[in-house]
Length: 292
Figure 1 (tube, rainbow, N blue to C red):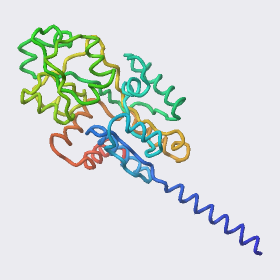
Figure 2: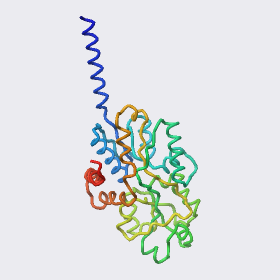
Figure 3: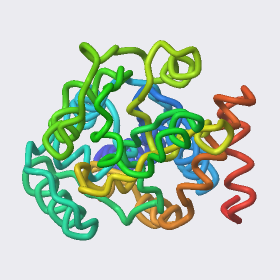
Figure 4: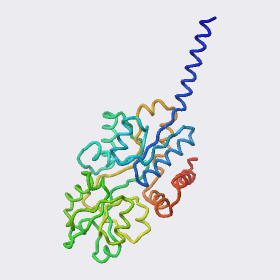
C-alpha cells in the first residue's frame, strides 16, 4: 500500500512538472528600434492567440545583444535579417542573391548555434540611402552612382550599426566611393529624418521600410551596384525551444509571407508618425491578416 501511494505520488509530481513545463513562457525578443518592436509584438500576440504563454523581452539593444540573448537562453526567438546575420554575426563576405543568403544563414546558424530560421515574413528591409526630394530633382539623382558623381560631396547621417558594420558604410564606400564632407554624424535611428529635414546632414542611411519614406518628400537612391545584401526578415528561434513546445513551429509558420515592405512601412509610420501604441498596431495587423 505504501509503495502504491509512493508511485501515485511520483506520477502526480511528474504530472505537475509536465503542466509546469507546458506553462513555461516563450520569451519573445526584439532589437531596439520601431520595426523590431512591432514585429516582436506581432509574434507575441500571435503566439498568445495560439494558446502559448508569452514573456516579452522587446527592445533589447542592437544585433549582437539580441543574438547573445538568444544564445544564452534569455530569449527563445526574435526577428532577424538575413543580411545582418550574414555580415554582422557570421562575418561572411557580402552576397546579393536572396535565396543563397538565406540558405547560408540557415545552414550556419543551425550548425553553429542550434538556431532555426523559419520562412521569411515577406519584408526585405535593406539599407536605404536617402536624400531630400528637392535635392534629388535639382541634381537629377536616381541611383547611388549618380550621387557619387557629385563633386560637392555629402554630409552623412548614420546609425551606430551602419557605421560599424562591414555591410554598412564600408560596403557603400567600396562600391561607390562617394565624396563625404567630414566624418559621418552618428545618431539614434529615430533622429535621422529630422536631421535631414533640418539640414544638419544631406544624406542619411535609413531603412527601406521606414514609415516616413512614404510620407515625406524624400528620394531613396537605388543601389545600382548592389553594395548591400538582401535583408529578408525571418523568425530566428532556438531549436530546443521549438522541439520542447508543441505547436510553436506551426504557429510561427503562419506568419511567413504575411508582410510586405509597403505594409511594414505603414505599421512603422503608425507608431513613429501617428504615435499609436505598438500593441494596438500589432493587434489590428493580426486581425486584418486573418490571424486572430
